[in-house]
Length: 157
Image (cartoon, rainbow, N blue to C red):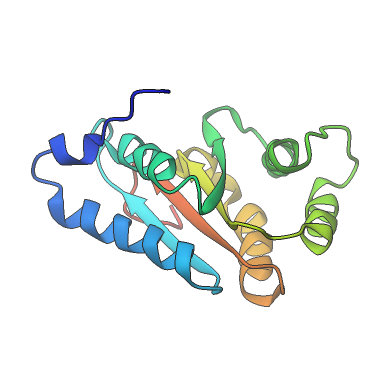
């Protein structure tokens, strides 16, 4: 058995933020509603650490797919990375279309959470990446949630 430590108890001055994120995870684990949350703050303040800890805490109820945008150079790279996480396939001429197909065919035993870390690194492509994600989030019958982590407080920047 692996050792599991709840680090959220040891991060000081972030109780309110941790409580809010925990509530988000609770909500998506219990409801069949698509959700979005944007987590921002200065580099090194524990955003990703807290999110990864909560992913571990809720792993029995939530399947998470974590994408670090640090090495994403184009919108196509982003959708290839996402598709490779969900479908284990990186050979696609249209990864967004294949992602939509995966959503149509996926049986949902657990809630799905897509976590996009360092989204400020793809700010040049915010519209080309997140418009399709939001379209799927709000128009698809597929139930999933998105958690975006950034060092910038302005999602569009």
